[in-house]
Image 1 (cartoon, helix red, strand yellow):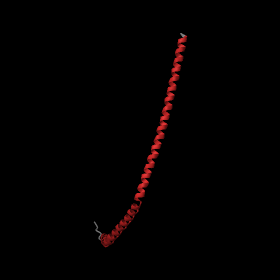
Image 2 (cartoon, helix red, strand yellow):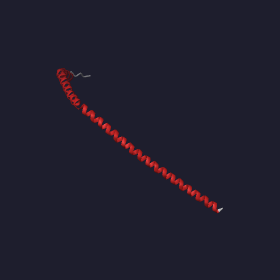
Image 3 (tube, helix red, strand yellow):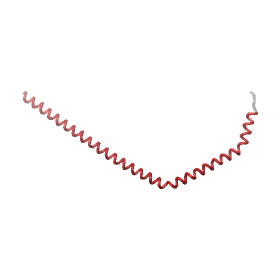
Image 4 (cartoon, one colour):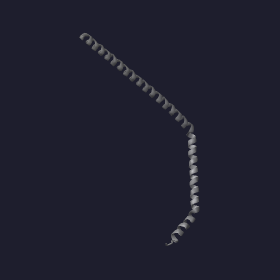
Length: 110
């Protein structure tokens, strides 16, 4: 009986070692797949980034002149609007002054 018990233990240990080898191999394959996936993702990211950068540079090159023109137009429009506001305030200044003086001088006691 002792021989068959010893034989069973040997088989169990061999099966355990085989299971451990299978687990280790699976971990190794998983690690390799993760590394490959990471490498592929980094490659795709760098490719996407390069495409976006090229598109951005293309848009800058196409829109460079129009941006300067738009800026110049914006400055002109802003200056014109400032002049209009100043003219309007100069026109209304006497009326505002009269209202303020009237409010200060006509004090009503309650």
